[in-house]
Length: 354
Image 1: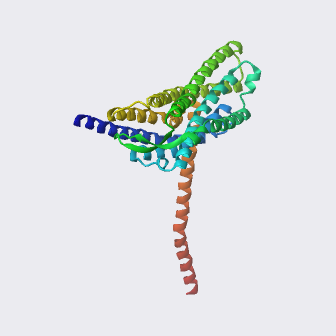
Image 2: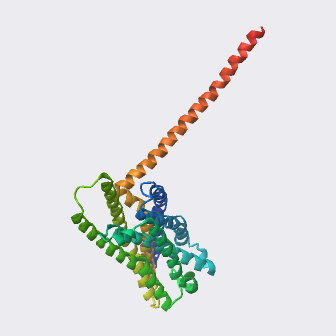
């Protein structure tokens, strides 16, 4: 019995440690990277591209994930402090807003995939759908749609007693036990991972097919402007592809473990089984946050255009800093020379009086 208790304690310690380490790995690099994303995607070279607009809006939602959701989860998982477990209003608002923000950020990348499909199509009517105006409309409609679709959480989320890592009953904000909890897990798995991932792959394949057909039709000789636009399109497509693959790998385990937990919620489990499931759940949930925090590093690795614009931003920052230091140094030198000049003037005045 003592061996079982020791194993449970080790699993609980591992759960807390892994969740904290992965969250801390996510937070500082993710915060810096997302800020750079905003700076790069607002550059004149990229801010006119509808695909870049989707990247930018997705980044803004991911900033909420990194600066709001991640700290709340760090405090909740590592220190067992979460106001949502004690106040019903906070419980409903927190989970509702957190779910909506994370889902919208993923679906915006799907819209970017659809935009690339439209842009690469030989059908002129479809190509016209790839525009900045359409990107703004689609992003707004998507956000409003997800707000409505997830509104059932406001009604059916509640504070209930559940078995903690130590095997004790504690108050936790969760979906209503029973059919709705299974539905909520299936619903979120479908909207957060399964559906967008499948559609991303589908439109990715269709886009590649369009590009191959396009290369067969277009003439080999084209002007510099066409080559530049084609190169930009390929850079954005490469950046999009690597992010799609990373989203799929990061989000699928979390949705799968959530679905498993919902279907086995009515099954009687001992403390050791509960500790094992908590470890798997925290590991998968922590990994899912990488889908929201790593886009900058994926773009930097795969997009030369992104790296070029990033280099310009960094170079401008260093240039401004060096100019500021030179200006400050010149001002200090002038201030240090002023007392000497004043002393000389005073000396001249004294000699004249003598």
